[in-house]
Image 1: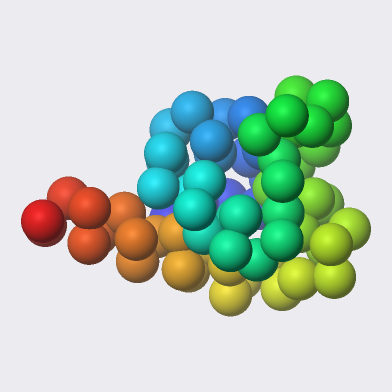
Image 2 (image 1 turned 120 degrees about the vertical axis):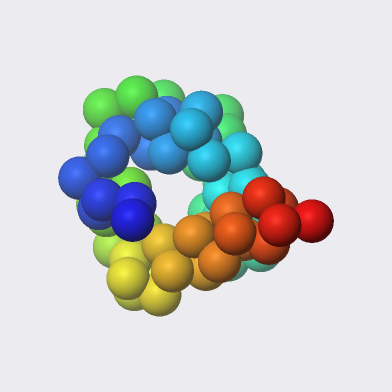
Length: 68
């Protein structure tokens, strides 16, 4: 389970499948300076998104990627 407390950059590095999920939801964290200091929970909240929903989507994409 991905913690809301992980830094955005750590989520992007450890879960590459997060990139399309975040982009689909209008979160452009790839080039953002805040990715190194802000948690994924903080970043998603700043975009008005529910962190639990988005992290579940990233986790589901992870399982799909592993099982493909």
